[in-house]
Image (tube, rainbow, N blue to C red; front, side, top):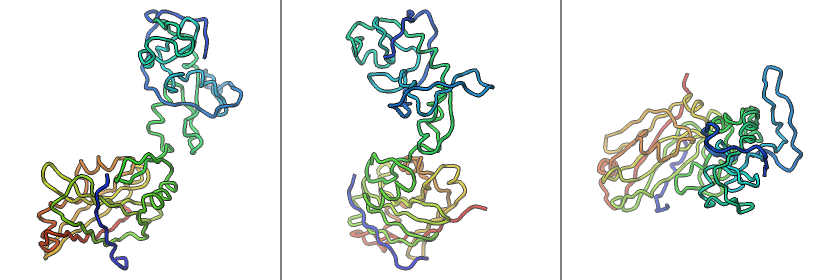
Length: 319
């Protein structure tokens, strides 16, 4: 165990133009979700042929040809049916109603014209992942790109702090700096821990009490959560661990938690969840050590004015 026992106090927080246009009923529709698929802009577009085993041209990383497929209203990539006004200005079908069927550029009535030229262009393109600047070197057909990006391991992580819906995103090192500097989260080294959590007036448990501690062990980083919330109408306390990395890597580790007092003890053995999984999902799935308030008060010595829980634990690498 580490020297000293940290004490955590809870508190409340909480234009592309085209002459090729057809009526919408003259060609099949395709489905796709919109997403910002822009690449590095401001440079002349370059189109090169893909390797000999592919018949599709490839869009180079420094090209902005894919900008032609960017909706001028929502700035997301356009998927069929791509709408077109009589002057040739295009926008995605989702934004057609948003602009009251008026072209956002020339203000003409859009009607039911679709731009088949852009739709065919999209089918021919191979584009780099939007997270190329973060390390992803994959290239994808236009209609497969978004599906990949939803699961790309290089996509930024969201801030794991439970105290607010923090908008910060970044890689692991950026998150560590952000958590320590902006959220004042403590970082400790070692695979064992011994914490004493203190909460004033435990009878007022609500959904806005939590603490977070970071651990560095085995060359990885972990987030230890301790939260107080209402499970139905019953106040409970819950501790669980999250891994700062991908789920596949998180499964390589295990952890245990213990809490007790007055000769009694509760134990939990589990596998840390990735920070890709929101802390509320982990909490609501009850994937951690849960202590009901009555038991927590018993562990604490029966003092109903102040709750004092000692939580110990260990992290290990699975064989």
